[in-house]
Image (cartoon, rainbow, N blue to C red; front, side, top):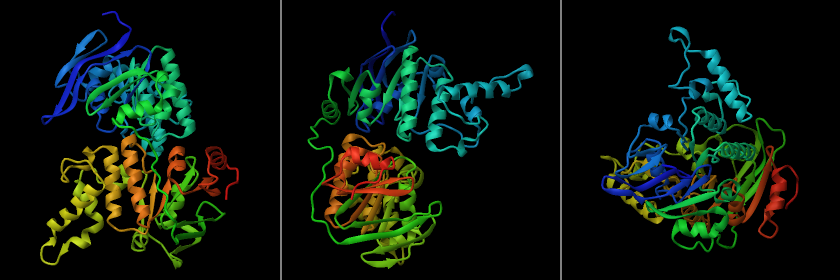
Length: 501
């Protein structure tokens, strides 16, 4: 069938236990396009991608690719016909080398069936050069950063010479420089005639890299169009079925007394101390480039990482915090940026994950944990935070990214904190869930909680923060109030220029 479309889907439906996840999806994707799949978490993007890449069979309908009408194919068959996917959750083996991961299941062999290691290493090095990556291909994956592992996953994808490449949130863990390398590679692949399906919640990336887009909502195909012909606001409205009059719903309240003061805190690797304070009913944003030291600073504040020197005051009283447990006893909660690795137990229930912080309150001297009391508290906070789950017995792994983040927030809210430190609160979260999370933070702020928000998202920093501290190379290079914060000045500080108030 001669056509300018590399992929066409015809009435694809997918049901899970009778519940529709996809409903009559019929779309067309042109050969050589970078085509974005957009929609809130749970909209159906990932389900369709899993059907295309062989993880799921369609309940009904089919798609046309490589001269075939396909209802189901295995992941190996998908690769063999030219479909490759880079998942948001990396599919690498930590204790195997870069070479072994790239060619896993496709090892090159020589005489007598022996693995041709020299040839495989050489091919792996050539593929890494495509990304301008200077890794030793014999290095174990576990020795690489998450961003570096993402790049290896991309290299693995390219090694099969796919004609359709699916990228699921590819820039979520990449630095600005790594993102630029990725975009350069995508443009080169497009010039070579490759087609890219690009899934991202970062709408600002669309005009930089995408030609066309498809919006999904509630498992249905809403719209397909050309990126250049539609504004960001129009696309957002298609995604959420409502007009987001304010994507960053900051509330104005009178600031309270000082809740936290950190004075001359020195990390083990730095000589100069860092000082800052946070007030009740305030969101203090911490901005900086990846590697600026924001997360390391806050981990030292809560005693998770060692410090050489420094003083901490809570509500004006000096406190020696040597562990996260001590921080929690003094009213400081910390929400990690790596919720899946360090924040949540994905294969446990919503109830289990939330109630970890209140088990002492649910103890019965005779029966142990009072299940009814635990359930009542969990049900209440699930309703208050609008956590979407069919049941609190649901495994957290099965929730969307936004709802997983809300589960983590719920656990912390139940401790009734004085100070909340939250690292990258909306990373990997869709636009609708972002607004919901901001509203939760606003409510905590109105109740008198001092919130320290680490974020790499400039619009988020400008939209939600009452004040902003900017870090570069381990030091604070500027403080800004609502009166003088702007993108140019904050960015200048992030690159090392001292200014602000």
